[in-house]
Image (tube, rainbow, N blue to C red; front, side, top):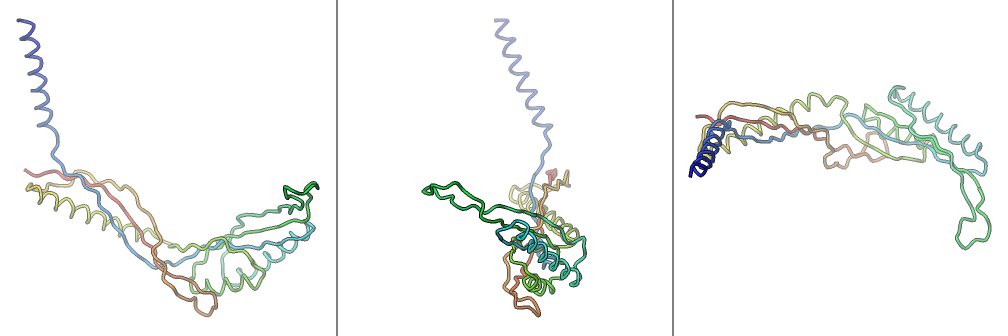
Length: 232
């Protein structure tokens, strides 16, 4: 009997400790807020270049080198800073013949393909279309990528964070009202990331150019987690 009483007392003590711990748990409301700010891009990054094939490797590379040199000179005349131009890839690959599975002859090198790609940052979008036209005129025959961006997204990120905090506060107020409890002060705020995202592109045409360019918009996003106390 003594042992049974001891076990019962231990169980009661555990329940009492759990009740005290539960009573000491902070009463909080945790929410996640989302903010988004839209802006027109003011910068574009393009990856372009020249590809040429010839029977001789040196001849293939010579044409590529000459055309890329002309392109770089044209970009310089267009006002593109040297720091906004970067060579991304330079390749020379063999062209093989007799590679068919039914051919009885060994594969042979029949020529070479040379390629040089350059990444260019354009900070004046009005000049984007004319620059692309100029690249074509100077022998460019390869466009791998066109991406719009923002030169200084920091102020927009701050605006998106403000919007995310406002969204979180509104959510917390709604939850507190629905639960019939008063909303207390903020206990913590965590910035959980975001970034610059492309939005639906709008059809447009670059000025003074036959090259159609889509201007569109960018969105800057932010997410925050906020913890609020439940008031007394």
